Length: 203
Image (cartoon, rainbow, N blue to C red):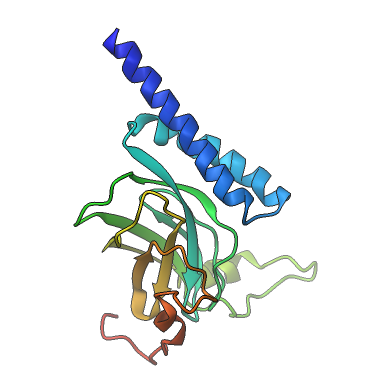
């Protein structure tokens, strides 16, 4: 009987996570992006949230790129994340990462990302306009994979989103603020004012 109760609680948690995530995203996205998000919701949450236990909650993911490189893809705790062109971001949220409902000191996130340091590089094309395979292979040799474990700032039960900030010199930070970038109370404005150095000491 206890096994059935646990299964029911996990199923209920999964359904609640889906509803919460979709409701948040419906206020920020158009119908087309919602449809795409729903696919991600049911794909990810059926695997993660339903096995996470009733003490977990879903959190939409948003990314900001503060560098001249292109973030080709990224994940936070295995969830996320779209391509982010140089010095852009903050578009539609992607659903969802899974976090404890109650924040605790020392809570961390594993960020992984792939980077193209020369996104504006000219890649040779053939007479039909198709990218030359050898030229693309040469260009892709500059791609790099990175990972970092960072602290997740304190959040309340009504978390808005996990914001991942990609900074110069392959540094990354996570924010849990509910304020928008345009707000005077947005705590991470300094990230948008950072100057990218000509070289990095960690390279």
